Every structure is written in C-alpha cells, then in structure tokens.
Image 1 (tube, rainbow, N blue to C red):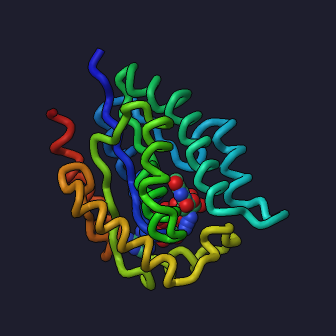
Image 2 (cartoon, rainbow, N blue to C red):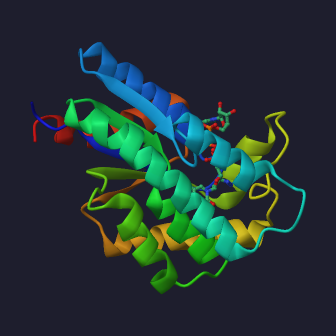
Image 3 (cartoon, helix red, strand yellow):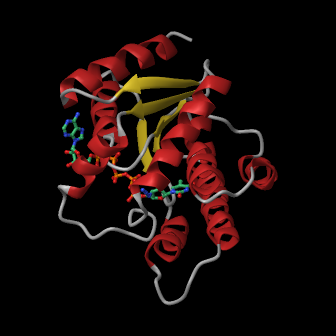
Amino acid sequence: MTRGRFITFEGVEGVGKSTQVARLAQALGAAGREIVVTREPGGTPLAERIRALVLHDLTEPMPDAAELMLMFAARSVHTENLIRPALARGAWVLCDRYTDATYAYQGGGRGVPDEAIAPLARLAQRGLAPDLTVLLDAPVGAALRRARARTVAADRIEAQTTAFFERVRASYLALAAREPERVRVVDANGSIDEVAARVAALVGTLADG
Ligand code: Z5A
C-alpha cells in the first residue's frame, strides 16, 4: 500500500483555509481517492476536548506555556490516532493548520522562542511532516474582514489585536522562506474559484509523486 499524502493549510484567521480545504477535498475525492479532512487543534474526540479548553475556556488566564503545551497535547493525539493511520492506509489527509501554526501564533504572535517549540514538535510528530503546506496569504486587514463578517463569536486567540496577526503573518512568510520546497505561498486574494485554481495547480504536482 502506498502511503497517502499529508497536506496542511496555513494562514491567518479568515484567509480562506477551511473553504479551500473543502474545495480541494471535493476535487481529490472526485478522482476516487480516500480523503480525510481534519483540523487543529482538534480532529479526534479527545483532541477536540483539548481544543475547547485552549480556545474557549475563559475561566482563568492561560499562560503562554500552557497554551503551547495544550496545542501539542492535541497534536500528539491527532497525529497518532488519526493522521498516521490514515496515511498508512493510503488516504490523503487535508489538515486545517498543523505545527507551522504553533511557530506562527505561539512563536511569532506570543513571543515563545523557537527553541521551546522545536523539542515539543519532535515529541508530538515523531518524524511525521507535511508533504506540502499551502500557506494562504493576504493582507491581515482583508483576512480579518472576511472572518469578522461571520456571526460566530471570537475565541481567545481570534480576539487578539491586528498587530498580533501581523506578527503571525510575518512568521508564516519567514517559515516559507526557510522551507520553500514544502511551504508554498498561495495568493489568497480574489474569488474562491480563483484561489482554488491556484491550490489545485500546486497539489497536482504531488499526485504523480
Ligand atoms: N492555533 C494556534 O494558536 N496554534 C496552533 O498550533 C494551532 C492553532 C493549530 C483555530 O481557530 C485557532 O487556533 C486559530 C489559531 C490557533 N486562531 N486564530 N486566529 P479556528 O479553527 O476556529 O479558525 P482559524 O483556523 O483561524 O480559521 P477561520 O477563522 O475558520 O478562517 P479560515 O478557515 O482561514 O477562513 P474560511 O472560514 O474559509 O473563510 C472565512 C470567510 O471568508 C467565510 O465566510 C468564507 O466564505 C469567506 N471566504 C473564503 N474565501 C474567500 C474568498 N476568496 N473571497 C471572499 N470570501 C471568502
């Protein structure tokens, strides 16, 4: 059995990740592949419970270190219980955020040093890495306008300032510059169809590999 492909989507809130994950899943599923759509933090019942804690529990302040470790606790569960088995049976896994989000949000956004993040990433991922990361990029103002046009209440992280999201975007772009083969920047401006065509062009090259 050929191992499946692990494709992650990254970018600031509202840039269109969930929309593009769904579009790509539809396109790849039509070709007869098993497609697993998932997200972080979350993706399994236990990891979704950790998500609720880290994003929505407002009962007391959450130190940055606790936020970081909860992200990795959820990631470990998700990686072992859902992503790795799916890839082993040949499925393509499309994941809305993964470890790059930790470098961008807890690292760039909160100021946690990369040296604190890297050992936790090794522990949680145990050698697994995305085959391709689609970094959807647009000016922060445009992405936040899309996100805030929705009626859902902001979670702990979504409630941050524009300056926070500017740091997150800058971290993502720095990551793409460091790992240009894996992390591909896709212009998220334009219509949903236009962005989907850009993503499909990138992913097409993986199908033959
Ligand atoms: N987080 C973290 O801090 N550390 C970590 O390690 C991980 C995550 C893994 C998860 O929030 C939060 O966890 C996130 C980072 C943090 N917080 N923030 N910010 P989430 O899962 O609830 O949400 P999100 O990941 O931030 O994404 P989102 O808000 O759901 O946005 P999106 O998926 O990028 O966008 P969308 O839902 O596809 O689109 C937003 C709206 O725009 C929607 O109404 C669409 O119909 C519309 N849209 C989409 N594309 C277009 C185009 N092209 N034109 C016009 N309108 C569009």
